[in-house]
Length: 85
Image: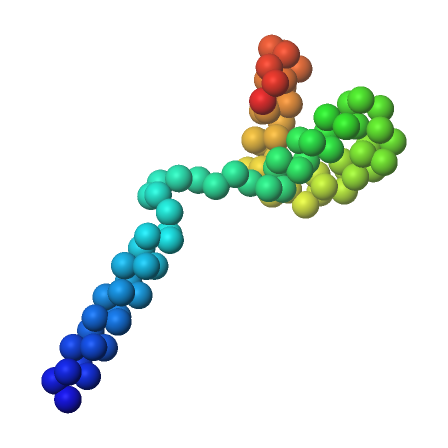
């Protein structure tokens, strides 16, 4: 019984160690895929792609307020400073 209890404790600690190592670094924000996709479509639309123009409108409707602010800020920086973000 003592051996079984120790084995369970070791297995639980192993699961905790593996889970912690796979969690990734702390305080790192992953890139928002919807924002990145919208920026790609916006660039294609500005190049004259007619399909991208309609997709741009649809994708913009799916963005929440924070994402819309971020997208507008990035587009403004691109247009004003000609920065390739």
